[in-house]
Length: 239
Image 1 (cartoon, rainbow, N blue to C red):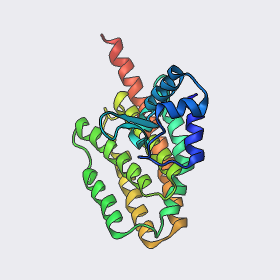
Image 2: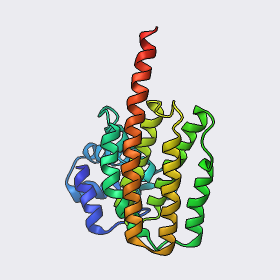
Image 3: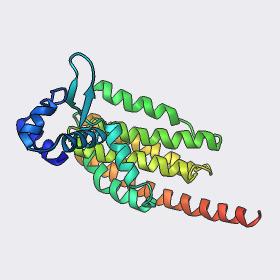
C-alpha cells in the first residue's frame, strides 16, 4: 500500500511541502481499510517521505529526505558488511576522477577558496596521533565538499557517502594510530595541484591528478592498515 501511495504522489507530481489528501479521501481513492492506509502512512513517514503535522493546518505532507538521513540509512545497510579499504577505494578510483574533470572551470573563486581553507587544517604534518586523526577526517572533508559542488546529485551523493564511510573506517579501526608523513605529503601535493587544474579549467589534468591521488592513497592506506593490524596483534600477544 505504501508503494501505491508513493507511485500516486509521483504520478501527480506532488512536491515537498504539498499536502496529501485526507485519510477518508485516501481510503476512497485506494479502496483500502482505514488501518491499511494508516500503516502505509506510518511506513512512508519512517522512510522520511512524508511528515505528519497536528493542529490547525495539519495533515500529512510530502517530505524531502535529507542527504544526512539517506546516508544514515544506507550506512546502516553496510554496518555489518565489513567493508575494506580496498572496497572503498575501488569506488573512489572509479568516481572521483570523473567528478574532478566535470568541475574543471566550473567553480567560482569562493568555492576554490573554500577548498583551500579546508586544506589549512592539515597545512603542516601532524605532531601526534590526535592531530593525525583530525587531519585524516579533514582531508576526506575536502573530497566530500568537492562532491557537494557537483551538478550531478547522484555522483555527488555517492562520493560524499564513500568519503564518510572511509572516515568512519579510519576512526573505528584506528588507521590514524601511526603518523604517516608520506600519506600527508602526497595528499597535500595532489590537492594543491587539483585546485590549480580546476581553476585553469583543465579537465584532462584534473582527471589525471585525481586518479593518481586515489591510486596513491589506496596504496598507502592499505599499507597503513597492514602495519597497524600487525602492530595491534603483536601488542595483543603481550597481554
